[in-house]
Length: 116
Image (cartoon, rainbow, N blue to C red; front, side, top):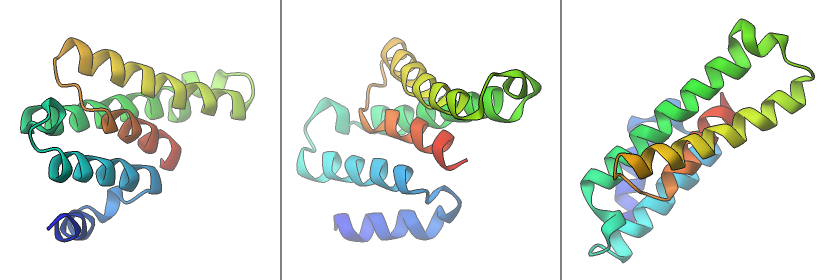
C-alpha cells in the first residue's frame, strides 16, 4: 500500500519531484503506514506540516536566491547555504507555533530551496 501511495504522489506531483522532497514524502509515508497511531501521522500535521515546509522553502528561495536582496549578498555559495538553513529553521518554528509538527516538513522546506 505504501508503495502505491508513493507512486501516485510522484505521478501527480512531478514538479515537486526533487530528491530531497521525494525523501521527505518517503519519510512521511513511513510515518503514516508504520506508525499510524502516532501524533505526527495525523492528517492535520501531515498536510499542515508539508504546507508550512513548502511555504517556508518557497519564501526563503525567493527572498535569498531570486529577489534583488539575494543578488546583493556576498558570495553565491554563502547565500545558498544560509537560504537552506533558514528554510529549515523557519519551517521548524512555524510548525511548532501552528501545532502542525511533522518532522519531514523540514526536509520539504530544504528541498524547495535546494532544488529550486
